[in-house]
Length: 344
Picture 1 (tube, helix red, strand yellow):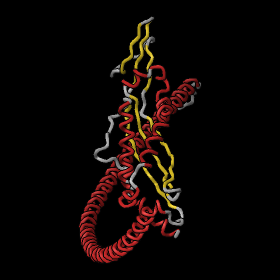
Picture 2 (cartoon, one colour):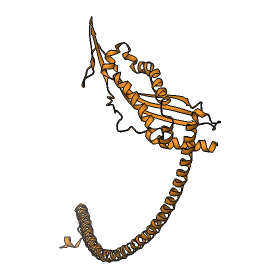
Picture 3 (spheres, helix red, strand yellow):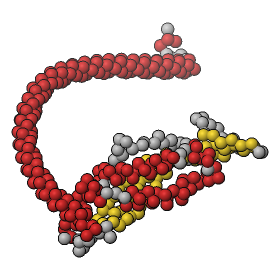
Picture 4 (cartoon, helix red, strand yellow):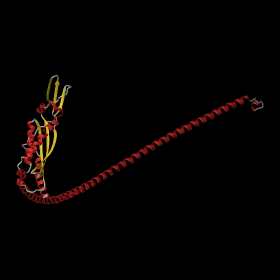
């Protein structure tokens, strides 16, 4: 019996989970203003309250109050059918006070969102419990909770609209069932409806499981076929890539051979020019060395000639000096009468 109750819970959740998180087309969608602020001016007995305009510059006499968008999560629960069904209720509410609401509640502008929560929490709980308690017994068992969630969200939104509060409400109902008790006559139709729906749900679940299994097998076959096609495609691409790589490699080798031949030719020409240049330099160096040697030889000969001339001059001077000394000495010698010259 636990399995049966679990199946009923799953069925109800599957029927309502998607609907509870999606705002239906007939749900009122507010136009929130993320940057909504009020400006309060008070000078003496005079005051003024207005929505903050674009490009507003705050002065010392201005008091600015934010009217932010508030997220409010509210949870409660309710028991139905003598505790046979337990319904958990979760509300996801986004709301924002309008200018009109703010004007009517100027005393709480600084904490206006907290004021809204405090003021309307009990009213929300009453709307929730009233809606769930008055729902038709067999209708929601057959059709799920989607319509109830939608109605509850709309009722809450309408309540906020009447109070000049912009809101967007999402509602989620999660039912759970206890063990089937002894049948109570007043609730027999509910139990029978649940049993019938449980059977229909299990049958639908088996059909869906078979369909999903068949779909999975078809998907696996298609996936296998796509893998084979992909492998063939990849193999063809790899062959084409290898062919292109081989062609490019051959072309590169040919270009490299041409480049190497051109490089060898250029290097050979450069080597020949280098040898010619080196020979030219050697000839120039030889000629310069020869010229330098000739110059040095000429200078040496000139120096030797000059030295020889100086030596000859010195010899002549010494000869002349000795000659003069000899003549002087000769003149100083006495003349001998017996010399042949006297005899004559």
